[in-house]
Image (cartoon, rainbow, N blue to C red; front, side, top):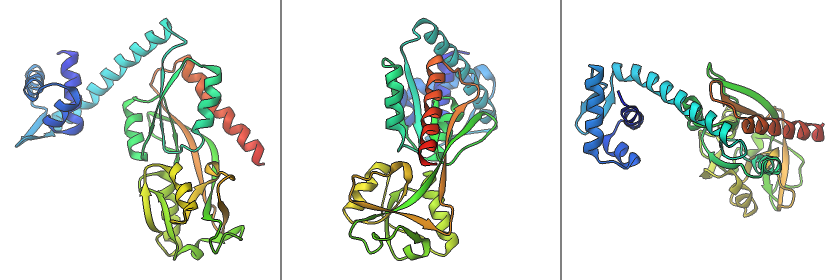
Length: 295
């Protein structure tokens, strides 16, 4: 059994399609198919059920996938540990976020401590983030909502009130508070379903007796302020995303504790470099300072 076979098997198992997997690996379909066939010959069992051009993991494949992911995960952790030993002041932090509003300030604070460390940040839905966490492909996630499982560590770092953002000329702009039911006929702008804040506010509004009517649903929370300012719609906005320089009024919600919990997540078995440990300290200190400012 070869490492190349395991890498190819994971690529095919995750998409269950030879053409797509070959494209992602930059190899020919023929080469990929032959490699998977050799792996199955070595194991003595088929790992996929063939349905035309598509593949489906069978029971053997599902069992072997877990083991293969674990084996490659451990090898990758070993490589990372050796890189950290040989070049402790270099490297890249892999980050994923569903709660992105505080990230620029956190990265700025960390860069002052570690100016040579690079970042790779992905804005993801909750499920996409969980997938990367389980695979051990990211160092940390800033997530709302918190996620807990056997292999994921979860540290809640902040409780972030969710406000209603309305343009200055809106009928509610002069108010400091609003009830949710007052918003039932409003047009909203927001992120897509699958992001923690959207799912939380949708469920609370449904409990009150209405579903928000969205005229815009996107993947970039930072764009919502511009849409509110342009009077396209109103928005549920975490307090950490509030910018008083914008032509927007922010209203507190009466009668409901509309709060998102921000958590720092990491894989319990992922190797934690000194750089990663320092990044975690910066995140915790940042939110502790924010809490002190608001109490």
